[in-house]
Every structure is written in C-alpha cells, then in structure tokens.
Image 1 (cartoon, rainbow, N blue to C red):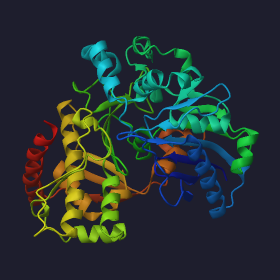
Image 2 (image 1 turned 90 degrees about the horizontal axis):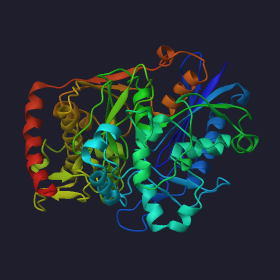
Image 3 (image 1 turned 180 degrees about the vertical axis):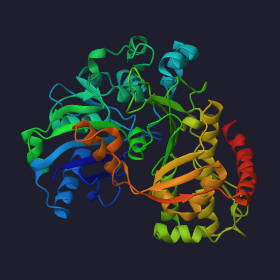
Length: 493
C-alpha cells in the first residue's frame, strides 16, 4: 500500500488528508488548530499572519493523521500543498521570515495597484497580465519596498504561503507559473515573469523564487523537517497550487466550460477556459490553471467574495454561538427575502467585484419591530449568494456560460437553504462531492509522483447530491435579487 498526503494551508486552519493511492479513498483527515488561527490587523484594512504558525499547524495536523491511521511513513509517495492565495512572505538568505505575511484579505496595497494600472495603462495590463496589478502580491511587495525599506533591503526571496510551506519541507525556495500569475508577476503573452511590471515596481527578478512544475518533483523532505513531522526524509513534494485552482482540481474541473465553487471564509466561483479573457475593470481575475501547458492553455477565471463564511461566523457570535446546523434550521424558518432585510457582506476588506472598494458590510431595511434572528440569519445567506451572483454576472459578460457548478459538501454548502438560494438565483445545477482542498492536493500529489494519470486521479470521489433549480423559486429569487441589486447601486456609488 502506498499513500499521498495533502495539506491545505488556510487563513483559519491547516487541513491535512491521507489518501490510499490504490483505492482513491481518504483514510484520515485532520484540522489544526481546533479554533481559528489568529489574524492580526495593525490598522484598519490590514490583515497579517505569522508564516511560522502555518508551519506549526502543518506539524500538528500531520501528527493527528498518524494518530488516526498508523501508516508507514516510508510508503508516502508524494506530498501536495494547497494554500491561501495572494499572500506575501519575505525571507532572508537564511530562510528566516522578515515580517508577518500580508495575506489575501489585506487592503493596504489597493492604491499602489490602482496607480500601476493607470501608469502601465489599462489596455497593456489587461492584454499582458489579464488583470490590474490590483491588491495582489506584487503590489504588496511594492508596499514593503516603499514603507519598510530596511526590511525590503534584507529580502532574499519572496514567496506565496504554499511556497513557504514547501520551503520548510524541502529547504528549497521555489514557486510555480500558476503562483506567479496569481501574484500578477506573469506575462501571459511571453510566458515568463513580466519585465515591464518588475521594472515599474523597481523589483529585482532575483527576489522571485525559481519555477518548478505544478505536478512533478518540487523537492524532497529534509531530515530536519522529517523529524518534526514524523515523515521519512527524502519524501518527494510533487504538487502545489493556490486554494482555488486546487479546489477546482479536487472537483475534477479541468476542461473549458467547467466550474467550481467554494463558500468558506471567502466565496469563490472559478471557471476554466482555453481563451485569453479579462474583465475591463479587473473585478474578476484570470490566472494560470493547474493543468495549463503551452500547447493546451488552461486559464481559470476567478471571482472572489471576501465576506462569505466570515459573515456567517460573525452572525453566529452575535446571535448566541449556536451551532451552524442550528443556524441553518433557524434561517430556513424565515420567508424568502427575509421580510425586506438586505445584507451586503462586504465587511472583510476591499472587494475585487466592487472594483477594490472597501465599503464595509451594510444592513439595509432592518426593522426592529419585525426582524428577528431567523430573518438576520437568512438575510446573511441570501446576501452572500446575491453577491456571488453579482460576480457571476461579470463572468457572463466576459463570455463565460456557467450552467453547472461543482462544490465540496462543506462550509456554507452544508446549508439546505444556501444551496436552494444559490441554485435558483444563479440558475445553475449544483453537484456536491465528498472532497475538499486537502484531499484534492493529495490526489494531485499522486499525479506529480507518477502514481497515476490525470484521468485516474478521481477514483473514490463520489457525487453526494445534486441540486436542480426550480422554475417557481427562480422567479421568486429573481425578484428578490433585483431588489438587492438596487440597494447595491447606492452602496458602490
């Protein structure tokens, strides 16, 4: 028997999965810590985490796997890594972290990215980068250069969160083409790091890590890391990808026209295509997908809503810390439309779908005389879906047609109400699977290790449920969504 291990490095927790290569079954899963990892906000709109905390939780999660299933570490054929996208990790020549990571929901670099978008030219940026430099990793590095020059002067390599974990495992600083594209360092036409962007930001290309393949040998676990993890020295790391491209992979979303969605801390719809496509305002973003090749290009169009599960978590705290199952039941008792209460879930930093505006969350038409907890909880779920639908409309304007989406049966998709509102508002069929990001990374590691081909990677994955739109409910939610849209126009003016 041989195994693979997958890690999903989130901003809330680290998840790990142990897969049996022969059967495709998940043998053990672990989440660490039990409570959400801390996130620092030194100023409004900022969000930072200590990368060493991720590494600590990787160690904890690995030991939890071993407690659940006593596997022989020498039989692990490959390790895969999925990770929170767009973060910035800076290390010195000794691979020591120089400052907390500026993570995905941090808004401090918005104006830097806007200035670059104007200076480089909107047409140039969209043609070559397929995005505005925006609030992405390159702009965050420029922020460090401008406001923390002493730290910047000590940087030997910059990397994404998953690159950092791979470095702690293997001792090698490396990244992928997909990773460079998510940091907005990648020129899609020349298929190399963008010299124009680097020159504009005065960034030396030597700060970027070496490129390794998304699938394939990326390094081997060092003796020191093996001792900490309880794994075997020399175990190959054979895959890494950002959490959303990886989520798409985990759901077997690899072909043009296929789409995946998640609704964890943030909410995402991610659609694969084989064309160069962009939104003129860069409200949704295009990145290199995991199975891209020069002969068969594959890009992923991603719309992200920062305020998704984090809104649900906040509502949970504000309404007495009931369980999420209890919240879902209570929300289902309120009528569609929540008796006029509208929630705009934009309270987790600048939102790309709002052209990087940070409006904060808005509760509209709240009436103390008629609204109770069930209305509040339902309006939260409806507001999340409506914001996702708003982003999907932008994708439709780009020429993408999304009629079916795949999701793991987890997070917000555990809610029957959320599934109902999503399917009928977005007019899509939802397929729910028994997978998650850590399992996807473990399956992908098997491809990278040469244990099986792409078409065999999804053995053991099952569709647990399908949710079809209903014509009557579609009409009802279409009216409620239009009312929500009217309120949104006043918020973003």
